Length: 313
Image (cartoon, rainbow, N blue to C red):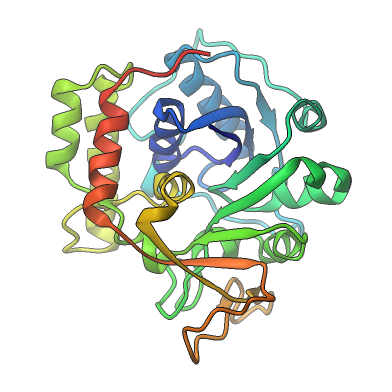
């Protein structure tokens, strides 16, 4: 079982990813670190806490992370995609209360566990800060997984950049230069990790998961946004959930080993650079780029996980 510290900014896609992680027997979520991105840090924190509440997993700590990029520049949120508060049409009850842990709590998590997987499905600011403030925690980390970048394809927030790496390229470079093995699930792969409405209806009708009643409404909300963003898609790409699939199913994915850098220049901010003049691996590189996956297995895997109940502690 892989022990995961999940960095997230829920977000509809993040919601599916968190539920997937909680439902996967291969994963043990040790903490969720929240930060700005799809929504503000405050909304992301409340959303993560509410997801864990519905799942009956309030034993998992929610740790508050970064509220802005390392540059201090303003980054827009995306209510047109994820809703005003981040979970589409779902309103968190006004009576809901929760307790979040301060950022320093990451020290407690990393001191209690070895061979952790740090998985970031949002902006990389909080992870970069953790490595900067507490560099010794890297001794407890086995591998890093990032959802981000766009290799040999256009970006989704600019012609050359994907949203997560564009949101704080300085932070992403800091993580890439950490010395840890970093696995990337970029847009050129995740854009094909599409869930279709027929799949979600199967979940809505047959799942034993406590999120069964909200799968369809949040999917349809997300789908309407994508109909405007990318007309003609057969389904909706679950970029963040795919990153966890990538972590748990290495035999169903293909990677290449390359050195990766992120542009911090204004015109090309967030552009992911790697040398693809040939597809040979660079054995000296510590970055592993996902370039392909088994779509049929991906769908079967999602349905198996989300059909079941949430794992108990």
